[in-house]
Length: 126
Image (cartoon, rainbow, N blue to C red; front, side):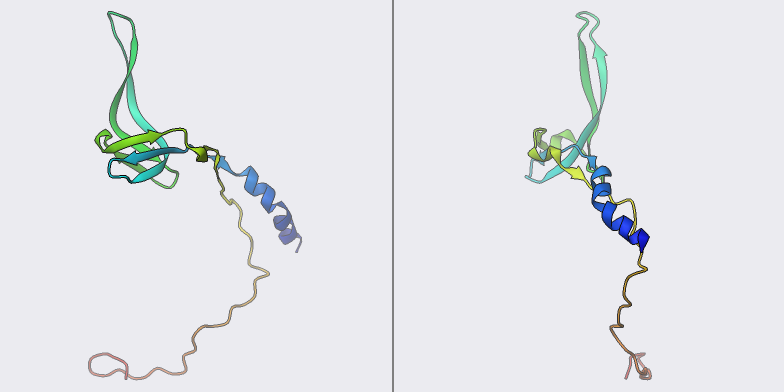
């Protein structure tokens, strides 16, 4: 009982402490489909030898990471990117502990099977 009381009292505090922030970039494809997550793309800095300016060259596919999956797509499929989404302040809540079932009541059975009927020639019940 003491463990259950501890989990019940500290659960709300642990949920807020275990929350992690998520980037909320919203991308909209050309067909109107939108996804939200953190956008990454491989890039390479290039220094111009004549002017000494450094330019970042984008390479490869664009990748969207939304914690549950990673989606890669070409820049030709991309319509627009919204990096100023108001849902940037949302937090992911992850429960790292499990409450025991020691106080759970026994569930009644759904079906009761008294007897099984015999099979016919097509292996179907009579």
